[in-house]
Length: 174
Image (cartoon, rainbow, N blue to C red):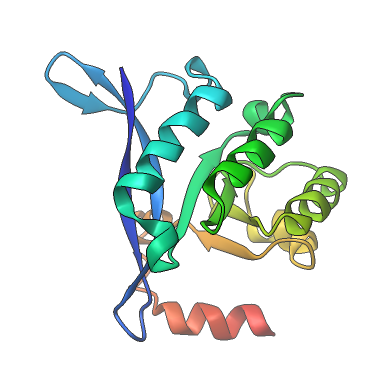
C-alpha cells in the first residue's frame, strides 16, 4: 500500500504555507517508509494518489501548490506526460508542480516545459547539489524551469554554515 505524505512548503518571509510537496511512502509492517524504487508504482497510480491528496488538503480552495517528484525513468516514460495533463484536468484550479529529482537533457527540459507551461503546470529541478544535479549542470535549464531547489542537507552534511534562503534568491538573480 502506498500513500503521499504532505510536506508543507513555507514562505520564509511571510512564514505562510504556500503549498505542499507530496512525498511517496510505502507501508511496510507498521511503518511508512521510502519505496525501494519509486518506479515500483506507476505514474498513473501516483496520479490517483495525488488526486486524493489534493482533495484531502483542499489545495484548490486555498490556492496552494501541490508538487510531486519524478525521476528520469518516470519522466521519460511515454505515458507520463499524458498522465500529468489528465491529472491537471481532473484537479482543475490546483497549482501543480512537477519536481525532477535528476537532471534530464536540455532538449527534454525545453520540450516538457513548453507543454507543461501551456497547461499552467510548473517545472522544477529538485535536489540541486546531489549527484549529477550540480548547479553548473542545471544552469542551462534556468530559462525553461520555474524553480530550482537546492538540497540543503548536502550543505549541512558538508559542514557548510546554515544558508539563508534569501541569499540563495539573490544568488539566482545574478
